[in-house]
Length: 530
Image 1: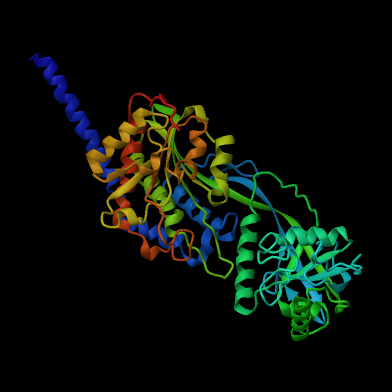
Image 2 (image 1 turned 90 degrees about the horizontal axis):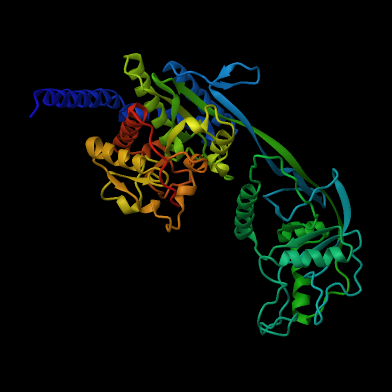
């Protein structure tokens, strides 16, 4: 063998070993203890679940910003005064309930405690109307509660469901089968019937009572919160005012200035005779229903580590900062895994690469450490970044996204040394190969591609922040360890995070990032898989 060739080969091999030793030196700074040190802050009760735009989320953003500054990362976003900042601000919008209440018989009833609302309604301040009892609120051929009843301009109080005789036969259709006047969506039909007859408001007395009614209202309150979703643009809402107040029997009785017992008697008479009552109770009601627009100010957090000879190219490492906040029952959802685990991983990676640069071993390409918000509401922070990038997307070589890597799912309960790899081969075969090689050389975890299958019903590829980069043609990897029993629940706490299992996954991200940031050629975009 040519001695000059042999010498060159030995020199190359030595250089590669030396480069690996250098990378390992900084990878080893990523420790379970350091991950936990950050997470006990990020996922503490004091941050109240880091709901998007909340004070807790902003405290988390401040914590991350201070550490980015401590590590020597540069702020490259711009604040409202035009100064450099770690925060990339943006607004979200939603329509939600404002002041909502009902007054009757000298009492004031509380929204989402004493009653809930189906449909949308907005009043001009507090309004009043006479109330009238209209039985079950049905207008049908065989049975009609509105016969000889004038409801024009009034608040109609009706019963949920439909009347039936002692044998179980329903009067509306002379059958033992319920009609369209019963069921979860029957309120719409009953509301439309009342409105076409000139009614101003509709109150429906629930069939559920006591604890069952309380549970119903609680469930409806949760649903209402989910429906008051955020948007990246101001929301124009169509108010048809076809709404129904669903109330308990006690509230219904107050609306009609009677008692629950007498109201039961009226209902019993209808069911017994199969005929609307000739004259029902009446009363008055005052109410206020306010729909309001909210602007939620939130912000991504970005720390920039400038590269050396290839500094115009950038690698993004991302995780989302926010979680779902406080449940309607007052419990805090700390989101230690979702995505506290990703946020603290990002901090550890930023510190490792910053230390490498301080020692003169900084990456050739630049790295942007990006904590986004709004992920839980619709991937809004990463969407905003992809449309308003701090660095050109055409110069972005890849996004390595970390979301929930601190726990194990049922499929891997007996072997926690795994991580789901999603998206690595979708746009770049080289990225996939680099990820595989990094794991084989340094970590030895099982790389599970089950969720990378386009036929997988969970569609996780589309459900975290990497996807907004992939849509722009940027190669991505999504690191994930699966859903567990505390997903989006108050039990997602620091005490359940497996830091010894998490740390090697963060090191896998580090080694993959190290190769992407230091290799001679930028990875190619050579595929377009679903």
